Length: 344
Image 1 (spheres, rainbow, N blue to C red):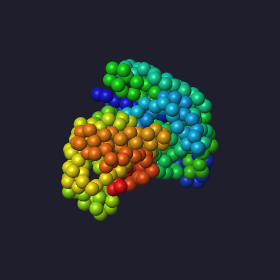
Image 2: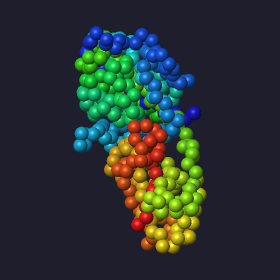
Image 3: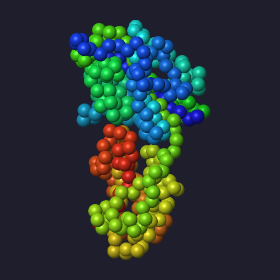
Image 4: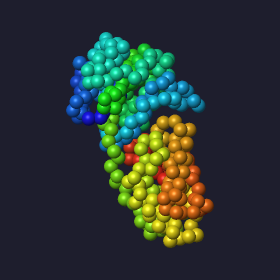
């Protein structure tokens, strides 16, 4: 099975209060690991998030700060079934020890280290690592909202960190990938038992089992396209598909292209802007280029494959500037990744 795993070890603490969250001594109620996952001996599961289909980009270069946002010049991009897990480790275990244990455990399965960094070379922020630091690039986009302020995951995530260690591994035979990040805590929130949480590192684990996106969107007919254009001046097309970070149209998109061509042949006065849209995952500039390239690919497919006059079409891309739903969840991001036809 072609699988990808990212592991992130996290440690933080929060200040004490009368009702402070304590360090867990067992897996949180209702949480279970997926079959085949590995954990550090004596650790406890404190967070899980699943998506039937998602895209992740694991940094494999030192992230840089651009306009107060961390960006990775190079990354490993993957798509498929995703599971994210977070564990808290036994007291006294160092980030390096946790990292090496995960590397050794997955080396047995054929993984080799593709990238490794420590501290500042990871682009790590000492303040709120899951919001401003390396964790902001590898954790699910809704992670911060999901954990809240006083959950064990939030306490283990903390406000200040140090000794960050991170690695990405790959399996050349299967194409699978895996990453590990660990760190130790600094001062944190009054919602947590700071003294005790500062003794524990954590591991955040995210896995992708690559799979094709299940096509749930039916191709709109030429009549349906015409009605939407007449009613709103635009229509979203979800039946034109691309591989992750690619602008080559997949063969399964032909039904949608055929209906667009039929519309334009039945209505010779219609001129359209073809507009590419992405979600907000990854680098904005790269997504802007990608959205333009995808729109251009659709335009050329209509011109070259369906004999639509070139002067009746333009190709534009706006990246994530015009979402139709929130980018904080998988279903919203799927809706935002689209091609739109807009009346000129």
